[in-house]
Amino acid sequence: MLFHSLTERLNAVFSSGGRPCAARLFEPRPQRTLCRAVVELGVARTVEEMEAIQSLPLSIQVTLRALLWENLNRFEPLPVHWAWTPGYAPELSVLEVPGHGREPGAITIRLCTPPLGAPRQAGPG
Image (cartoon, rainbow, N blue to C red; front, top):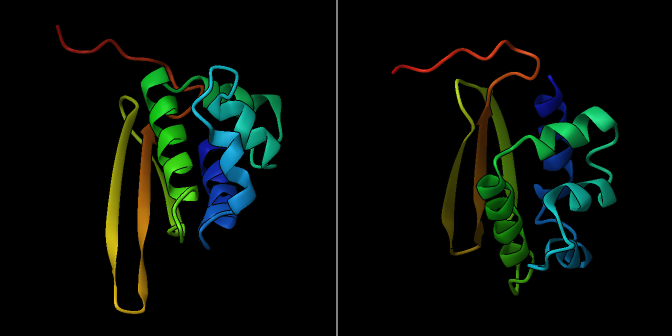
């Protein structure tokens, strides 16, 4: 349940809007990877957790990095809530609820991945 542990730590960091100083970790530069950023934040702590993040399709890694960078650079970053669910193939869902009145709004990120170590089944066709 590596992704479950990672999402718990991600929620601890980002549910209050994140750390504004963390924005630099998600800058859109080639040497800034999602894995490197979450290691520097103390979210990924083991080789297995780093491998789990690196196992995500590159499109998902780049999307998450861009989403976090944009949010952390807002005048008032929104809280980001993370959820992980096991599934057949990697999938990313993002929901942003705008603020209203005194409510700041929030971003929910749901990551769906096959459980690590689960045997891969051939798809249809």
